[in-house]
Amino acid sequence: MEMMFIMIAGMTTTNQRTVRPGVGTSTRNPAAAEAVFLDVTRRLLAPLRISDGDIAVDVGPGAGSATVAMAAAVGPRGRVYAVDLDPAMLDATMAAAREAGVAERVLPVAHDLEEGAPPLPEPVDAIWSSACLHHTLDWEASVRALASALRPGGTLCVAEGGLPTRCLPWDAGVGLPGLEIRLDEAHNRWSTQWFAGRTGARRQRRGWTEVLRAAGLVEVTSVTELLDLPAPVSDQVRTVVIEELAARVARATPFLDENDRATWELLLDPTGAHWLGHRADLGLLTARTAYLGRTPR
Ligand SMILES: C[S@@+](CC[C@H](N)C(=O)[O-])C[C@H]1O[C@@H](n2cnc3c(N)ncnc32)[C@H](O)[C@@H]1O
Image (cartoon, rainbow, N blue to C red):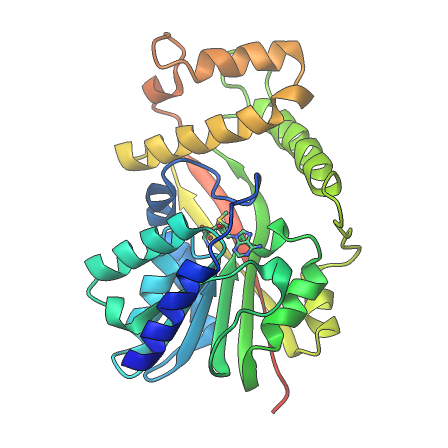
């Protein structure tokens, strides 16, 4: 175990890469956002049935909340490889693991999925990857690469998408009703353009269940979990909601009309009377989906 740690930790140094734009976390404080979604993450992780002594992988761990949950599940006899192209994310993940007292079971691996399967020294029981694979150029190739790292009968769980997030009432009283609906639409246009604008991006013309099946996985299924935090939310949730909305608006701005741009400016201005931080009717309602499959035994 100790030898393996040294070897993998070495990889993080030699494989360090410059992080490409568009592949990172949505906001500046991913740990805060992950904390709000932790219950949902735990519920989505459950079907992986990670248990004592397992070898698991978190691909694209962000601030490491899922890595820590998986490290707790594998116990002292197991291990979790945290795979990310961004050294800052691996540092954040290791800091979270240290804080939770499970760092000796977590092995950081610096690796860009665009280069294929992560360089792991052993086949693994379970792989979790949340909000990461959609950043890659070829989702099918990424799923194939991850499936190849599993032992026979091992499980892959890819958490991607779900339902749009709703935080504001349909009529927020400022600008035109339906503000978030139009933000979704504008954000979708931004992400479509971002995705297709990259050299080598391959449009995925089918759903994740088919992508998993095409990679040779069997017993493919999906599960969706609801996050329902009704208004009034705690200060912690409010901060995350405002940060996430600000990040979405920043990306979607070129696709919003002038009226909506001005409305969002009012809502996101902490010095103004319309700031979202002043509202008691801000909530957080969304759903996240995970797709699962296992390699044949
Ligand atoms: C949006 S964050 C998701 C973080 C966390 N898993 C979650 O669900 O909140 C995407 C993560 O995937 C990593 N990532 C993106 N593209 C990657 C790639 N090609 N190879 C490895 N990691 C990648 C990012 O550095 C980041 O940690």
